[in-house]
Image (cartoon, rainbow, N blue to C red; front, side, top):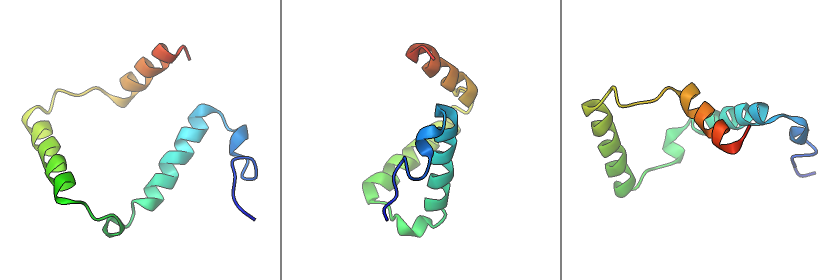
Length: 76
């Protein structure tokens, strides 16, 4: 039997619960980073982003602000 949103009961979760589930599933996938080798282009982009973050550490928004902003735009 295959898995589906309905058979797993995911369709009964609210949006926050679904997002938490996605995050938890993603975390289990990412445990073994070796299973997802990066291309040279991807590695260079990540290095660039880390360097930018290091250069401007205060140029960030807390996750709660980002989430609230998105929800406000979506009318939730």
